[in-house]
Length: 563
Image (cartoon, rainbow, N blue to C red; front, side, top):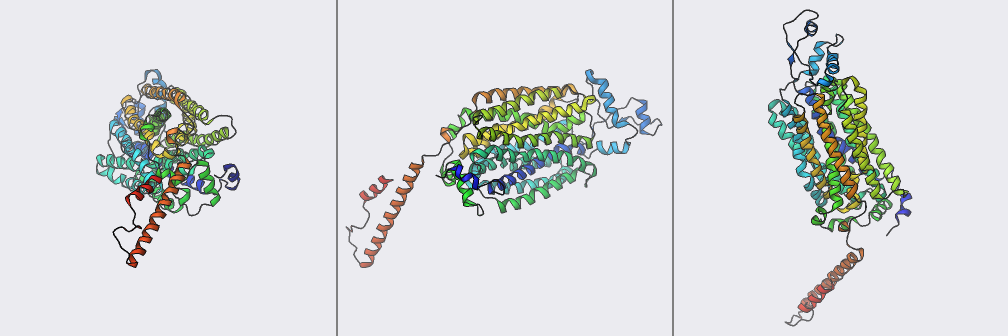
């Protein structure tokens, strides 16, 4: 076996095929999250805001340029939280200042569709109802047919589903339900495919860096989607919101699919442009060849009864509950509690994810440096990053619930800090799958992400149920649930997580594989020799009932016993 230390200087990361694959996965996750999140912002300008009675003479005068009007409704949100009623009332009047024209207010607040809060919550959750079904099958398909092919085909389906959304919305809301379900169904294979491929591509001491870089694409997607979608709502074509789906479905998805099939391969052995030095480095670092991995059956019983696997499951469920709550409902919180208008809403909703992207990329670098220099074992590194992530998120999100619109900068800072802590999990449970079972990482992540998708289905519904009046106090209850689950995840992961290859995930000993292959080749050669002799005798006419060149049952048994 080649010594990885000797090969390492000859295979730098720059322009290497393993990092080219990481770059493609980065953009792949970016596109997946753009198509996932775009509805969270678009729905703000798709749906008509609730109208309430206006009791202030000044507000009525403002509607008609100083003259009293009989109009008694305007599209603004009011809150009833007694503890902050005065402050929030003042904040809600900011959009009614004379410097802001009423026409612009109506433009920002009125939409085409009359969908109530429950309908909006179901639309946001429907993606995850499809997403949950393809996690385990996605990992299995990636192992059998290759993650390159499976992910490429499914991304094409995502593109078509996204492009059809505006037409479906104008036809019937049930069609939007169906398209969001299909979108989630196709996108569900993304993570299992990447994990299955990286289990074959990521060297041991580069796993944190590579995987944290790949999944940072999702954070960058949130930044772009929240900021650009808000601008498209106001300035885009097809009533603004329609352009969000057309652009994200065509430019991102379709272009990426073409490049993906051109530049990637399932394994280093199948890549046409990889150098011999890099191929040897990757295979020697991982410890076996891709062909060996493909022969290994999935140890379902051992995998499903493994405590480290369940530690990853619980950590993922608790972390993603906060992430999905903010992912699907952060624009609503910005609007209902902090009173940001749509253009401010998009930019400020994106800021926390910008912080998350930066911390995600840095966490992988720091984690691998700690491991490489021997400061921490892999297990303790994963625990340190994951526990810090979970507890930090819990503290920040509860604190944000006590901030009203008069303290907007502090609220935005806490949300940024919350998602920065979430970025630390990129060096925690996210990469831990490849540590403990690199050969089954696709299936394993399919299992954990199936469980991790449940919060995506539940979180929007919980937000809708707990915030019927859109008050700050109701949003605090939402954040209490997030914090409680995050603490539970930290405790469980701290007790049961591991960092080394598990016995049930190890390949068979190399000696056994070599002996098996040698015996098989020897047997094949012997049978071939016998067959050739038999044909020669037949051609000479020496055919007798007791031909000694024919294989007898006893000899066949001997050949089998050698195997």
